[in-house]
Image: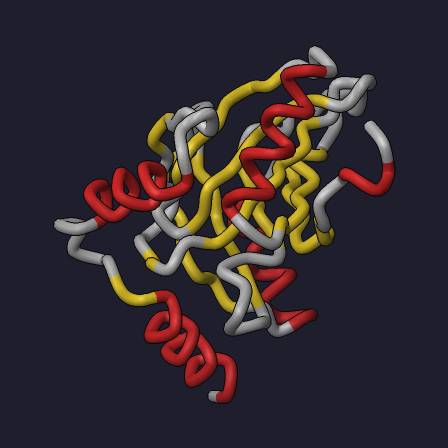
Length: 182
């Protein structure tokens, strides 16, 4: 990929597999002041917890159960990069497909759109861009990033419209900011 044609992508959060999920959550809350923003059943089985210390970021650390005792297992769940726009996501999607990069899935989280793929050594990488809405996580519905931006926006709005946890993202950020200040 030519450097001048690569859209902006910023590292924003990291995911780890854990042997003691509850202990890890307590550690990061107590030592770094992170606040649990969401959590629940994980798509791969087990549980997942989202933590943040920034009201503009739903999560800065993702902790997932499932790390076996075997030290040969990578604790990296994912390495995530924030992309500026949904159109940039579509550009990345096209470039990844052209380069024949193994894409795991493309999904709407309700609060963001994501591409999950693997680097050459098998580490999972996520590119994502935020949506205008918040919905409780985990939330994952497959999407086709080949679709136009307007259709992706409309489809996601329809997905989250009746979700009882749905809020405008700014309202959710304001609520988290208050929690962080206490």
